Image (cartoon, rainbow, N blue to C red; front, side, top):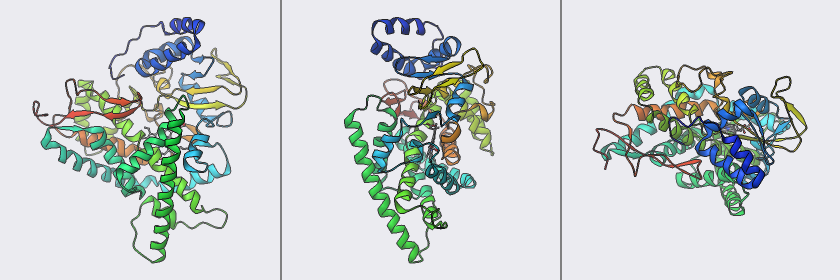
Length: 435
Ligand code: HEM
């Protein structure tokens, strides 16, 4: 998956069609394996030859226009696939599992106010400070295990200080997010043990949140001076009767913040760093831009790197009514009600109809060609803080001299389940010092 140039040879479709005729399960296994290890070549072939890829179990949507159509038509393509899993973990509905309900509309709006885009500079500074402390601590060893010591460490620190959610301790908060997100997004077979672990973690997490909420309310009543974090803001906000959130809703909405961040933030950082380190020329440009006083000049190097291995490659939806996708084009396809649809932003970002010469590494691409944070009704709630944290952590890392991939057996980025970054040991400082 980390390879710079994946094969571009065709032939996936022939192999898939053959396998399907013999054994549908083997055909799905092939597609799943390609999605992991050979996704750029697979998607390139699908965009060209079968842009709406219909299989008996799911339909994959690969062109930019069609991916954004799916993601912006929430009444046709719902997030029902997430709903029950998230509800079971959190003990009630959460926005990512529900479409166009009044609750979703109000809570998303309120949480957007709480995650004020004007916090971006402060959040960037915070993430940079935590990253530098971690890098200072690792520097004398000449190496860093970046997933835990840097990426997750910063994400958990931002949860503590900006969201106001330190958890009982960072490790416990980290265990909760992993258990719930694994069930919500990576438990394809519906493994009951993974589900049970998620429900257990969700119950612990919401109990913790209720306690903390009670603590905040009594601190406010006592007139204590509290920090300006998202949790405190939410608790301080008073809305007219019928519009405010009860304690249960506050707890569930606060749970959504670490759930949205602690897996996907480090995921994006790890993938972007690996892609940069695999490309010496792109890396040199990024390192030069890292020193630019305006961090925005650096950020686009991170997004272009991430395009070559996005953390979210597929976004799942359920088709709620028969719908002709890409109507009026040669690829128009009827999607029957009940179809499990996978919109593929990872493919859309290589669609030459929208993204010129997509296989070239070009940091100056416009922001509207990027789909890392989804699109439409469910586009990422945390996009503003997430963007600055992801980029600033990568920037602080690249500002250190001698950041490099180590030779085997360390070397590469290790992912669990092929998805979640687990271990990524990087060399720091002068060559030959890493021990
Ligand atoms: C501050 C950090 C973050 C928070 C609080 C957060 C929170 C959320 C929430 C609550 C949603 C659901 C919104 C809704 O259903 O209306 C969401 C969606 C999404 N987020 Fe984030 N997120 C964060 C970071 C990230 C990162 C780093 C990425 C990837 C680079 C990401 C990618 C996405 C995507 C792709 C969706 C759309 C999911 C879909 O349409 O199925 N998020 N986020």
